Length: 348
Image (cartoon, rainbow, N blue to C red; front, side, top):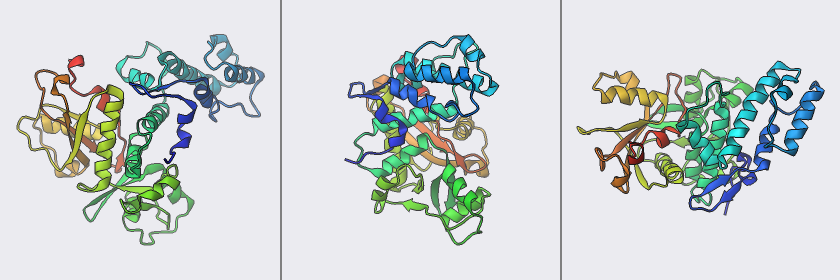
């Protein structure tokens, strides 16, 4: 069995078999955040900062007094610690990564509470997916799962919709501006992103070459084909099913679709801000121009295996999902939308 995403922090957590399967927060997982470059002491760090850091490494769950933060000489470091310690306290109080993640979106933050950096939420989604997909034998699903915690750049060429990791595209483009050397879809993506192209190792992942993922699962240099009817889009649908099942314990079927032709359309969930806005307008019967419609990257139909878990007034009706890209052809999927916006009876 192949291991994957070793840098997610999965092996620092207490992976509980369940049910429900959950990731127990450990001291070692909390310590990993203390070793981030924004927090780890540097040569210029004051004595109070070094002492605070050392004490937290020893006991990462201990309460820190406001005076200890105020004693730090560097203002930026005081802000960094305020953010991080509030986040670590949430993790420790929740007990599991899943409860911390979902709780962030369903429980309003206390007045004046420091915000949780979006990067931290992406990291939690990353490690939860590592747990939910443990034992997965299909590398296409693992690549598709990256959309839930890493932004992508989209290009549409010859009817094919391709997604490449945004950070990787920008990194390669920044290394060498050598002009377009015939990279096909990747060259188009770089041009659309207004980035210089170069000869880079960004391969389109297919069912035939999928095994290469096992050696490149953390290089983020494989392009996913999200074209309707192809394996990449189906893999994303299966990942979304797994995401719902893992958090909510509900069996759902998610199938890609080309368009919504439903006079009884009653519920939809946008998987990102762009798709949410477009689907809201369509649902209200407003005119959406063709250029804006082209920002929809994918549509899905979600059905519950047991309609009784839905709100009684719409039980048995499908839920439509949309994934979109912004004006810069960037996709930032918000997986929390699929957890908090479903029409569940318990939340009616």
